[in-house]
Length: 225
Image (cartoon, rainbow, N blue to C red; front, side):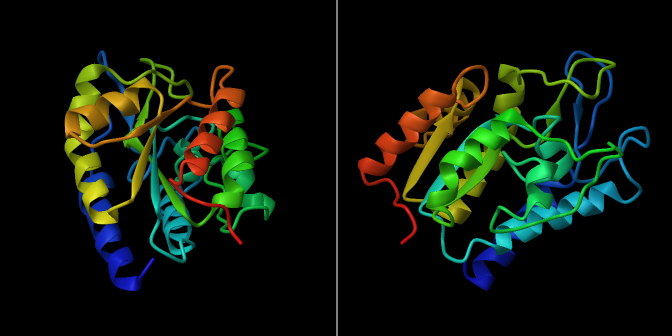
């Protein structure tokens, strides 16, 4: 990704994503890990660590991504602590990805996430031809249980749809891939054409892999080399 394009993208994320408010209680509790911290779960300075991890990921995109892969919301074992969509802390520290990062959680071991593991096992050969993001760019959880995942509501998908639409405009990918129904709903609201692929969670490993292979064989993007 060109330096100028990266800066425009980063400016947008800083202005609109990092400033989204967290809501601990109510019917739709959510947490923004890029600006807030829970001392019981996060290391001091965790929010800054997660911002730095995200920046390292974006800098590793050595060319303009052909594909934007849109997930649902931040998973607590994944992006909630890593700061990188569809990526977990264990992967950042493994040295097996084209980028790295630091642990932000207080966990004795860096958190690992099944979805992230499946995602990168399938997608690594296509890097850096794609970028991943979530249609709801914060962590949605159940009330009083910060370390849980809650499916985003229709209202949340609608609330954050303008941010996704702006992001797509900035990246200008050739193809947008939707992982799951929430991502599809957000893209439909935005009027953005997309290629649906099974989300890798909840038994979706095989469907996700096959969907990505079909998208690649259809010319959406290609493997490195």
